[in-house]
Image 1: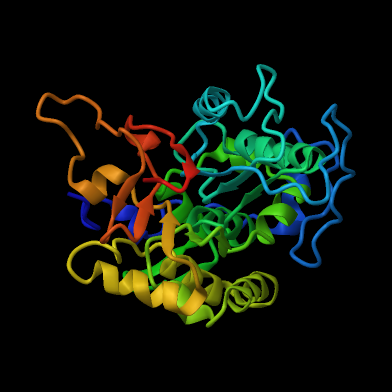
Image 2: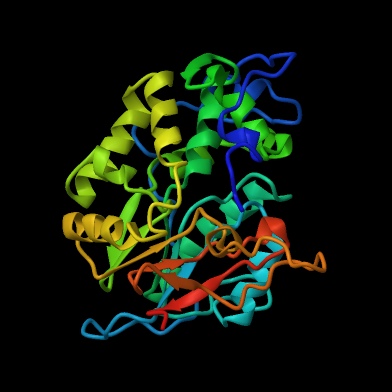
Length: 331
């Protein structure tokens, strides 16, 4: 079973040799960069021009397309491309092929896997292509987005943790941060990541990254929560940012006898009839982390639990599970 003790990254400490803080206005000093723009949190960059694709223009009264959700990707770009193709959502060249379909990524694009920036670039590309086709591709902010942005902005600047002094950079490394992702981080990535919503609702599904009630601490409506998180990223200091990251790293609120009550608390506050989330790998939720024969965990699909009120979408791709994409509603 999952435990904080077996995953020390949940209360990280500073490395023996701290690295200099990577400030947002110092990204141009990284090796291999050709005069990138200065990076700082502030007003979001304008949306890139919407490209034209050979899709028929949707009729004004045409109903929305099918709704899909994507679980945690964690840098596994090739697995993501393979599953998107399998579902018929992209073509052989990696371009949007889903027409008016709607896709929500549930967060955690980076860390642990080999190409987090490649994942972010793909999702940004699909967002533009989907809009041209009359659909959309959107994403939530996960705890690893908060961690990645914090590592880029604050580096080894100390923060107060329950385990003592820590830093974003140390925590990011302990939680699978990949230096090549940090080296490739650009202004447009930070602008896009920093304005992702923390919570959304679609077709009666309350979409969250984390299986926690910590969202309630940031507001009593979806706009309030998202505004609070965006304001924190733009205006607050390192300790407030760290506190937000720690809150959204909590998990397992929907398990056990009290789980349905926690789900109802969120649904009663924000609306919807069911929660769909990522964050906690399904093998941890079910207790089937490793088979007796050492085989990878068997993940047949999304995990419905908490009296059918919650759907878990993290298939455990980082532990030889699956990268899950599902069409909603899940039975």
